[in-house]
Length: 184
Image (cartoon, rainbow, N blue to C red; front, side, top):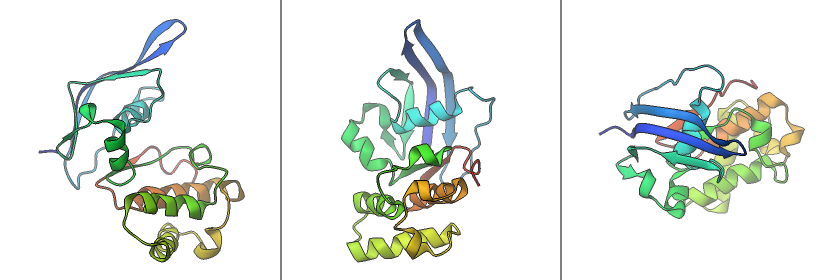
């Protein structure tokens, strides 16, 4: 059984001019420990497909598929709460635009530790230690000091490294990388 199985995924957006089909009949399977690349032109629906998988599309999106299973669970029949417990812990995404994905109101350390608080049983001290380890692992100099900075105080490349640290924080079973080196 594959870790991820999607069959006949279609995503449509409601617009003033009617329905716009952004994804049409995508099927894929990814086994555990397998690397799968989705290649296509700009605007071909690669990112929209993965956002649909994670349930991160706006309310104007209509997502349908014959099958969308992750780790033996049917994502299509899962309620929002159950899906949110998986997203970030078991499925994580390195977003293409870190400056619009990181919350400008919170320090990067808070955002990493919040991910750990939500999805792990680590106490406050252990979350702090793990956040420093994650910042070190992605090559951020002076990681303990950098935990207290806000996203706008970092370069695009450093912000992208924070996104990578957040995505890998809970050691997800499936890591989706949406052009992860764009800002590096």
